[in-house]
Figure 1 (spheres, rainbow over the protein chains, first blue to last red):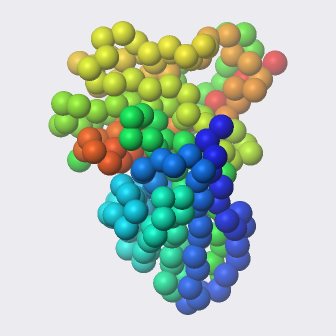
Figure 2: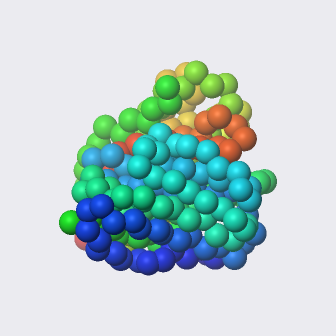
Length: 112
Length: 115
C-alpha cells in the first residue's frame, strides 16, 4: 500500500471558519492531488501539484487554495468554509513513471 | 470536454458468477487512459486496473479484466467469479492532458454480490 495519510480524518466546523486539511506521503512521489466526493458526483478534482511550490487548479477549485512547501506534504485550505463544502476529501499521489493514482483514506468534513 | 458515463447505478450478481460494469467515455484526445477503482463501504479508494489508449491488448489483473472497445469508446470492467468481498462501489475514470494526468471520474456503480 502507498504510504499516504490524511489528517484530520473527521472534522466538524462552523460556516465562515478557516480549515486546513493535510496530506502526507512517504513515497517521494512528484504528483499530488486533492479530490472531493459527493453523492451523485463521483470524485472531482480540486487542485493538484506537480512539484514543490508547483500547483494548478482542477475542475472545482473555487473556495479552495493549496500549498506544497515540501515533497511529502500537500495542504488544502478552505479560507472561509461554507455548507456546500461539506464533503469527503481525498488526497492522491502518483509517481512520475506511473499512470495510476493511489488514494489516502479520506477526510470527512462537515460544515454546520 | 472529457466525460465518463456509468449508466448502471446498481448491479446485482450471484456469488461465483461473472459481472460486467459498463463505462463509456468521451474525449478528443488521442492519448488517454482508463482506470477502474473500487470503493468498499469502509470508504478507501482501491486501484484495480488500467488501460492505455494505445494498448492493443485488453488489460487483466487477476479476476479483473477491462474490455476496451476504442471505436465504441467503452471500457467495461469484467469481474469473473464474483466474491462477497466484491460488493462495493466501482468507479471508472479517465486520465487526460498528459503531463499532470488529471482524472475525471464517473458517478459510480454499486455492485452487490448475493450469496
